[in-house]
Image (cartoon, rainbow, N blue to C red):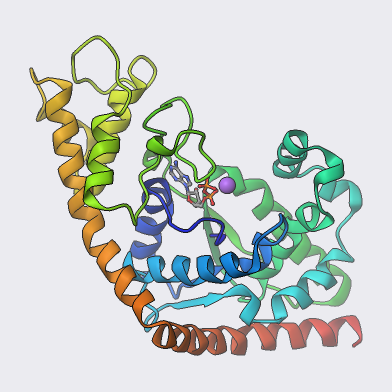
Length: 321
Ligand code: ADP
Ligand code: NA
């Protein structure tokens, strides 16, 4: 994830962190806080440094184990930028132009304000994965096209320069985990959401979480029922409760038969506060000792570097450097 906000939110927790945490027991996992990607849009340097640390701390607090998995900061491993350059030279301009995420972003901000870095972002992303000989890339559906690009680039490199890069498989993460904005349940919960009260930050305190959940938008029917099309607000609350209590939506829904929205909101608030409390406390603890956090990240970066440098050496050799 990009270090582009001071805190991660419930959507990041449900859609990414929880599933990543699980994959650690079945895979040799590598996680990266992608600060090189963050500077494709303007960043304040002091804020970027702070957000990078905070993002890493939240990964650890949410259960990414830096002793067992590898968790590092992208800019600490120089091979990312170096492999991205080589991949840039085998990517077609038309091919890069077809990336729909760039088209969406450029359509919003205008082509003149978009950087070339934002345009070539998926190529850096390809380097992020290919450096580690990754077998599987777990992503949301919105990233499928970018994984297709990295597969194409790896295959193309191999056919031009000889067998060098591993072609990764895509693993689309469970879609059931999608979380919506509490104030605008038609839109996904996002750090760039329009209403501050609609986003549940992992680092919000109990009072703030409770207040936001109690003021969540529902509907006037007064019946607790899971029906995302007709009842997006209530359904979102049920999904949230199911995720943070690790139960199924149907199971959670049955608890509120004949009960009012107030009861549902009370239960959601309690469960979210319970789930976030240890994460918030552990994050604050880690941030309280920046030297120890930096030491952990440095150890992890050198572990990542030893894999990445070996791949880059193969690539440099293959292209004739
Ligand atoms: P944001 O929309 O806040 O900028 P990102 O696009 O950086 O979030 O997403 C980081 C990770 O969190 C991705 O794996 C994405 O699939 C997941 N994610 C983000 N928002 C949600 C959400 N509302 N529900 C489920 N997963 C989400
Ligand atoms: Na985003």
